[in-house]
Image (cartoon, rainbow, N blue to C red; front, side):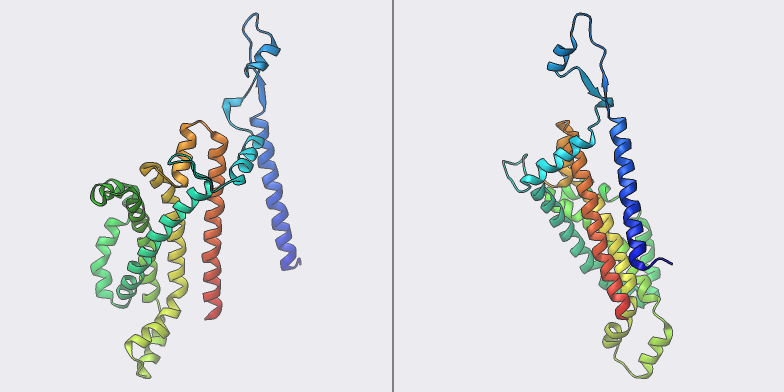
Length: 282
């Protein structure tokens, strides 16, 4: 049987192979095709005027997107005015909004979920509110936030809070309620005080489930911030994509989409490491 390192190498080789196939297909479907020239127009003149070749449906080639990568990453933190900022600054604005909304959700959801999980009566009382509010799209809250808060940046943070709070709240309550009764009975037998029991027995046992909720919330928050910034405009990776689309700069737009995926993957890996650390520490 192959070792763990051997399996990792096989997976990496398969990943590279699939990426190569996707790039080859992309290159093929965007190959330039000849354009039918009007009578009397030579190929040399059409080429000079930029009309001799055209990509299929105008979609950028891998080389054009790679050039956008180099151009955007060469100076990612430039600032030439409100509508012309580097991708590093735009990414920083988005991460700051996500961090603010996510931190607010942690402050609200974890204690509330902990209490709901410990008391079944509260769980039954809160459940109708959760079931009604949870399905509402976070973006549906944006007009209300803009009307009441009067600030686009704060409204975006509020939307991130709304989309992050439910997975954390539900998973925290579920994890706390699912702590083994035997452990709680032993703590009661030893006359462990309620506060100490909560932090030394319930919290460690529920920690993997709580981190799962936080991981899901972070993924949703990073997903929603792009759409929120397209609505509010100004700054952020979502606004960058929308602005590049308005300028018909598709290579830069695709570059930003790939960057969103990479950052989302890194955030997910961070929480996955935290989950493994907590699980192994038990």
